[in-house]
Image (cartoon, rainbow, N blue to C red; front, side, top):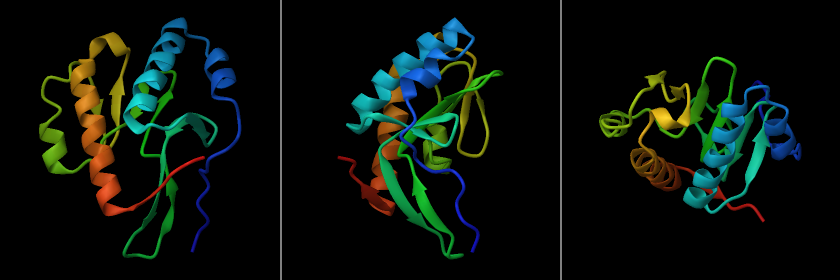
Length: 143
């Protein structure tokens, strides 16, 4: 079984954000930290070199592949901010109506800037994801 490469680290979230070149992405990143810490009750931590994660759970698939992942997260990439706030299940995708201007991949939402989306809808989607993950997998509470 291949080892999971992306893991939590003790790297500084604040340093990572302050090193971003785009001031709008910096501002949006600090706001997302505020929203996601409130939603999860967990502090922001680096997950790999470019993802900011909140909370943690352990997953194990039928294939035997397993690892740890953040309950919620985001990555302020050059082209867009990647939001890891949805499980990708059909029921949840239907609840993205009213979110605003975004693109979607399997279980990732891409936005250009935070003001393009409805934060109330985002908070609802984050709560749904946390509930889904907490019921399906073993949540790990960080100290």
